[in-house]
Length: 172
Image (cartoon, rainbow, N blue to C red; front, side):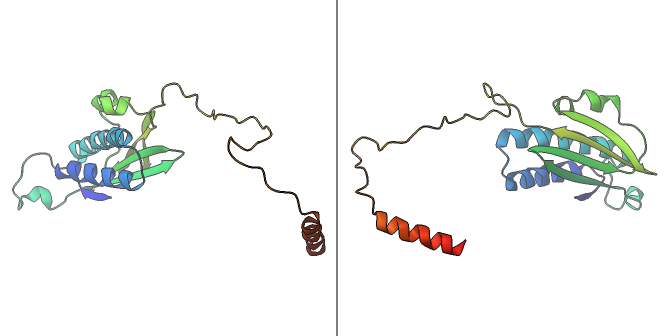
Protein backbone atom coordinates (compact mmCIF):
# COMPACT_ATOMS: atom_id res chain seq x y z
CA UNK A 1 0.00 0.00 0.00
CA UNK A 2 1.47 3.33 -0.98
CA UNK A 3 0.21 6.17 1.18
CA UNK A 4 0.96 9.89 1.45
CA UNK A 5 3.12 10.58 4.50
CA UNK A 6 0.41 12.50 6.37
CA UNK A 7 -1.42 11.73 9.64
CA UNK A 8 -4.39 10.16 7.82
CA UNK A 9 -2.02 7.41 6.60
CA UNK A 10 -2.22 5.89 10.09
CA UNK A 11 -5.98 5.33 9.84
CA UNK A 12 -5.75 4.05 6.27
CA UNK A 13 -2.94 1.63 7.13
CA UNK A 14 -4.87 0.38 10.15
CA UNK A 15 -7.97 -0.33 8.04
CA UNK A 16 -6.10 -1.94 5.15
CA UNK A 17 -3.97 -4.17 7.40
CA UNK A 18 -7.04 -5.28 9.35
CA UNK A 19 -8.94 -5.99 6.13
CA UNK A 20 -6.14 -8.07 4.59
CA UNK A 21 -5.48 -10.10 7.73
CA UNK A 22 -9.21 -10.78 8.11
CA UNK A 23 -9.33 -11.88 4.48
CA UNK A 24 -6.43 -14.23 5.15
CA UNK A 25 -8.43 -15.79 8.05
CA UNK A 26 -6.26 -14.78 11.03
CA UNK A 27 -7.97 -14.69 14.42
CA UNK A 28 -9.14 -11.39 15.93
CA UNK A 29 -6.54 -11.25 18.73
CA UNK A 30 -3.66 -11.74 16.30
CA UNK A 31 -5.12 -9.14 13.93
CA UNK A 32 -5.25 -6.59 16.79
CA UNK A 33 -1.57 -7.22 17.60
CA UNK A 34 -0.45 -6.85 13.97
CA UNK A 35 -2.58 -3.71 13.48
CA UNK A 36 -0.98 -2.17 16.62
CA UNK A 37 2.51 -2.88 15.23
CA UNK A 38 1.61 -1.45 11.80
CA UNK A 39 0.14 1.64 13.46
CA UNK A 40 3.34 2.33 15.45
CA UNK A 41 5.54 1.86 12.37
CA UNK A 42 3.38 4.17 10.24
CA UNK A 43 3.22 6.83 12.98
CA UNK A 44 7.01 6.70 13.14
CA UNK A 45 7.41 6.94 9.35
CA UNK A 46 5.02 9.90 9.10
CA UNK A 47 6.70 11.67 12.02
CA UNK A 48 10.11 11.14 10.43
CA UNK A 49 9.41 11.99 6.78
CA UNK A 50 5.93 13.42 6.44
CA UNK A 51 3.72 16.39 7.24
CA UNK A 52 2.66 16.28 10.89
CA UNK A 53 1.24 19.76 11.51
CA UNK A 54 -2.25 20.74 10.47
CA UNK A 55 -1.75 22.50 7.18
CA UNK A 56 -4.37 23.97 4.88
CA UNK A 57 -4.83 21.83 1.76
CA UNK A 58 -3.16 24.49 -0.39
CA UNK A 59 0.01 24.69 1.76
CA UNK A 60 3.44 24.48 0.15
CA UNK A 61 4.18 21.41 2.32
CA UNK A 62 1.98 19.35 -0.03
CA UNK A 63 3.86 20.37 -3.17
CA UNK A 64 6.70 17.90 -2.48
CA UNK A 65 4.94 15.28 -0.40
CA UNK A 66 6.77 12.08 0.50
CA UNK A 67 5.07 8.71 0.43
CA UNK A 68 5.38 5.64 2.61
CA UNK A 69 4.79 2.03 1.63
CA UNK A 70 3.20 -0.50 3.98
CA UNK A 71 3.78 -4.13 3.05
CA UNK A 72 2.61 -7.35 4.70
CA UNK A 73 4.44 -10.63 4.22
CA UNK A 74 3.08 -13.89 5.52
CA UNK A 75 4.99 -17.10 6.08
CA UNK A 76 4.64 -20.03 8.46
CA UNK A 77 1.73 -18.39 10.28
CA UNK A 78 3.75 -15.26 11.05
CA UNK A 79 3.31 -11.79 9.61
CA UNK A 80 6.07 -9.35 8.77
CA UNK A 81 4.96 -5.71 8.67
CA UNK A 82 7.28 -3.52 6.60
CA UNK A 83 7.06 0.27 6.37
CA UNK A 84 9.25 1.92 3.76
CA UNK A 85 9.98 5.65 3.90
CA UNK A 86 12.40 8.19 2.42
CA UNK A 87 15.15 8.54 4.98
CA UNK A 88 18.33 6.75 5.93
CA UNK A 89 18.24 7.66 9.62
CA UNK A 90 17.88 4.86 12.15
CA UNK A 91 14.51 4.67 13.92
CA UNK A 92 14.01 6.79 17.04
CA UNK A 93 14.65 5.15 20.41
CA UNK A 94 10.96 5.62 21.28
CA UNK A 95 10.02 3.12 18.58
CA UNK A 96 12.14 0.41 20.19
CA UNK A 97 10.31 0.82 23.50
CA UNK A 98 6.78 1.04 22.06
CA UNK A 99 4.65 -1.72 23.57
CA UNK A 100 3.40 -2.96 20.20
CA UNK A 101 6.94 -3.27 18.83
CA UNK A 102 8.30 -4.97 21.95
CA UNK A 103 5.45 -7.48 21.59
CA UNK A 104 6.82 -8.47 18.17
CA UNK A 105 9.12 -11.48 17.88
CA UNK A 106 11.80 -9.44 16.07
CA UNK A 107 12.20 -6.03 14.53
CA UNK A 108 14.95 -4.19 12.69
CA UNK A 109 15.57 -1.68 9.93
CA UNK A 110 17.63 -1.56 6.76
CA UNK A 111 18.63 0.98 4.12
CA UNK A 112 18.41 -1.05 0.90
CA UNK A 113 18.79 2.00 -1.39
CA UNK A 114 20.16 5.50 -0.88
CA UNK A 115 17.41 7.63 0.66
CA UNK A 116 15.16 4.64 1.33
CA UNK A 117 14.67 2.94 4.70
CA UNK A 118 12.54 -0.04 5.66
CA UNK A 119 11.54 -0.72 9.27
CA UNK A 120 10.04 -4.16 9.84
CA UNK A 121 8.52 -6.25 12.63
CA UNK A 122 7.90 -9.99 12.71
CA UNK A 123 4.72 -10.81 14.62
CA UNK A 124 4.05 -14.41 15.64
CA UNK A 125 0.83 -15.80 17.05
CA UNK A 126 0.68 -16.30 20.82
CA UNK A 127 1.29 -19.94 21.80
CA UNK A 128 -1.77 -21.73 23.13
CA UNK A 129 -1.42 -22.68 26.81
CA UNK A 130 -0.83 -26.38 27.40
CA UNK A 131 0.06 -27.20 23.79
CA UNK A 132 3.62 -28.20 22.97
CA UNK A 133 4.55 -26.78 19.56
CA UNK A 134 5.00 -29.43 16.91
CA UNK A 135 3.24 -32.09 18.98
CA UNK A 136 0.15 -33.76 17.66
CA UNK A 137 -1.76 -36.52 19.41
CA UNK A 138 -0.80 -39.93 18.07
CA UNK A 139 -3.27 -42.70 17.37
CA UNK A 140 -2.03 -46.14 18.34
CA UNK A 141 -2.86 -48.60 15.56
CA UNK A 142 -5.19 -51.35 16.72
CA UNK A 143 -7.65 -53.62 15.06
CA UNK A 144 -11.05 -52.05 14.66
CA UNK A 145 -14.21 -53.80 15.65
CA UNK A 146 -17.78 -52.83 14.95
CA UNK A 147 -19.36 -50.77 17.68
CA UNK A 148 -22.26 -51.89 19.83
CA UNK A 149 -25.37 -52.61 17.79
CA UNK A 150 -23.47 -52.78 14.48
CA UNK A 151 -23.56 -56.09 12.64
CA UNK A 152 -20.51 -57.46 10.92
CA UNK A 153 -20.66 -57.78 7.12
CA UNK A 154 -22.06 -61.00 5.67
CA UNK A 155 -19.99 -63.86 4.29
CA UNK A 156 -17.11 -63.03 1.95
CA UNK A 157 -17.72 -63.73 -1.73
CA UNK A 158 -14.40 -65.39 -2.67
CA UNK A 159 -15.33 -65.65 -6.35
CA UNK A 160 -15.87 -61.89 -6.60
CA UNK A 161 -12.59 -61.14 -4.84
CA UNK A 162 -10.68 -63.48 -7.19
CA UNK A 163 -12.18 -61.74 -10.27
CA UNK A 164 -11.18 -58.30 -8.86
CA UNK A 165 -7.67 -59.57 -8.11
CA UNK A 166 -7.32 -61.04 -11.61
CA UNK A 167 -8.47 -57.74 -13.15
CA UNK A 168 -5.88 -55.80 -11.12
CA UNK A 169 -3.11 -58.19 -12.18
CA UNK A 170 -4.13 -57.71 -15.80
CA UNK A 171 -4.03 -53.89 -15.50
CA UNK A 172 -0.68 -53.82 -13.72
